[in-house]
Image (cartoon, rainbow, N blue to C red; front, side, top):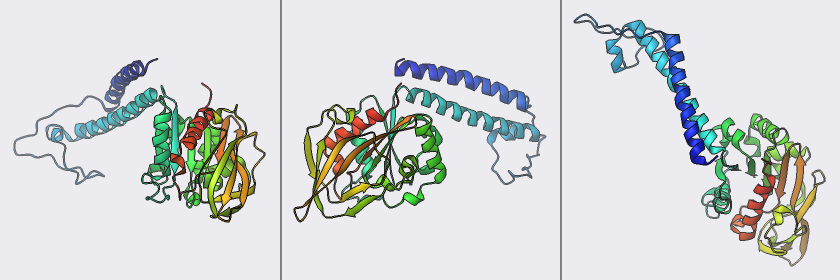
Length: 319
């Protein structure tokens, strides 16, 4: 179904449902009887929880009881219409697959003016036409992942560093369920190896042997050219990267490691480690990308952008 057809169908269902809502409200509240007050008499303010609330203009033509019923009825109808509108929007949105890019918001503004998730979102919007690409963050309402957005999300990309502990355990529970039981893809980036959702899904320590800011560049080698995440990548490529993670990485054995890396250090030495690792976690696919330290704009690199887009396509559940 074309998006315009889905929108029309969703809008039609919304109008029909609103008419039904109004009928239900009318049955619950009864007919509104308009009465004219005797000359010189004014409508007394309510003495209950709404005392002191400015009167709606229509209340000046209604009896006390009728006014209360009308107010309650209008509130119920408005709430119903809001829910119906959100449902209609969700129906239209799900004509597209959805990727949500989440970040805690601690990256330096001089490197990432719109934060790390903003840079990744900008790339994905260009590289994944036909996808709904959503930016979300820790400081957003409901920590950026309200239930309706999480339910619509096909792939969740996660970057975190200093605020892992701020993420609510209840949200982690929901993410775990979406991945394991419902097939949502999950992509963890760099220091998100210690993020709560990453550790929950890995069920391991998720620690590296060393974390040292003594690197100058990272050379990435494609070890599995046939893997979907490696599509369109050169055999080798390098970019500036100032922090290295050294093996061992305390996680379950990955099902594939399509990307290996070698950090060149300031003293000229080299340190090899795995850069791209893949797992199947329940019904969901999981990809960890080691690069992405916040001191350099790694996610603007053309090859890293290609990895991000390919990883989203790979991790997305089959339709």
